[in-house]
Length: 121
Image (cartoon, rainbow, N blue to C red):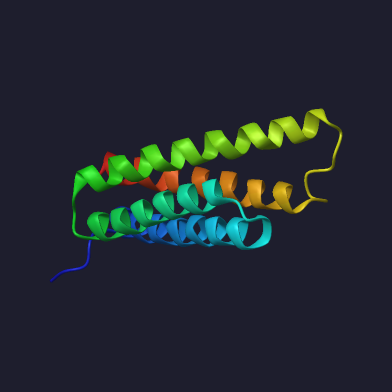
């Protein structure tokens, strides 16, 4: 089997890595705070992105679209929490929630760029 073209390979790896980060974040939220919603949301989005990574690697356009949508939803959710945090006057970098939010927003933006790049090919 030939490896996918560069944009597709980048989108596949990006989706899988972002999925692992989302999955780990959900588990950390549950372990540290007992948050079942974090576990469910992080687990579902993380597994979806990991599966999309495999789908993208095998050239399935649906996987790119789903990864793009999941990344968009995660960016929206974490950008919203960062916006609330800045309104309260708390430094974003100074809190765990702020650092996690920044990682999820920037990771999601990177995955969205990679997915669009793959779709343009």
